[in-house]
Image (cartoon, rainbow, N blue to C red; front, side):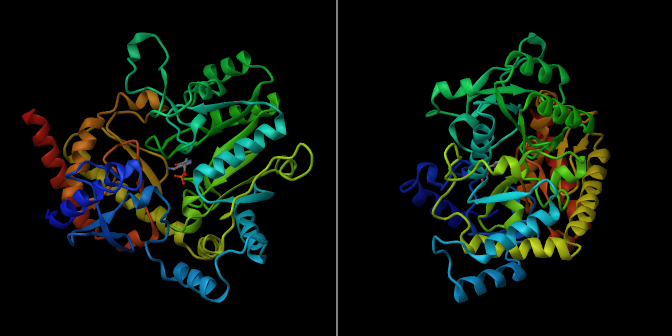
Length: 441
Ligand code: PMP
């Protein structure tokens, strides 16, 4: 694959940005970092003119397709006829919340944010303000944005399953104050024992449990419906807020997100990504009684920000939500996702590779293991090194994805145009190369 322009761009960018990229996760090494020239539908073109069918979709926001003409037209109309922001209320604020509420019965009231991180920060602060407690519980393998106390993780990669110990809790990197770790505790997904133990250990101290029921940052490994019900009951019994982080699942896995699939309602929910088909919009919402703690009254939770509810974001959200409500876009995503899973399954079977898929068709994980992993610890037993080889060969053949099996395959409406015969052949070639490479080592 020609990389002449991208090598030049990489060398230049190194002089101006750490790692030569705008944020850490885009750096794939000097030889592999992708510089995108344009995106359309489900395809990306890089600066050297190489094209890719994209299953990474910018980590999930694209639900319709890149440059969706319907959404772009709504944004252009807004910015040319109404403007981008004024720092005042607008009628569109309420309109978009009403659209969200029509799809998500777990939301009575909502506030906007500019990123998933900011939405989680708002939801957690609201939970703390409402309960008067500080401590939060998060699930191993979950990801909730880049802010200090959420930047701790269970070191499953460095953990030995036969050690009889729990994974160590480590920071994502430098710059995270050690004392922020004292506010968070970790439990593995689907563990009734760990859930009971942490509540027993900190009676009346837990403000919130924050989780992705379908872990969009851990190969779509999913909670069982029974465990979700147990979690809901445990939170209710302890006066703890259940915060469901639907930044990846919201408006994607079902119109009402993961909560629609589970029939479990959170006290607070965070949204971003698919809500705006790539425009930077986010929000958090939930029960009226809880959300009403936000405000300027004494004891109120402060929430705000210059770009909050800006009209680029809200016009995109309004158009996207309108399409998701009134067309069969999500049904198409489900159908196409299932077909693509079938293609992949046939290829893995042809090579005799034990495999399972986790999560729904709109956002599925691939695990080279006999049984579906039930939590992050199980992921460690998967043959993820083989997956990584397969992924890198796919990228070389024009299929873009994250070369880490903890990142799911994302499907958008525009994938309905993918030639599945081509995809199957390409996956076959990539797996042949991966298997050959593995045999040589
Ligand atoms: N929560 C979840 C579940 C996410 O997947 C992400 C981002 N991948 C975030 C929060 C943070 O969102 P953002 O990158 O928009 O800040």
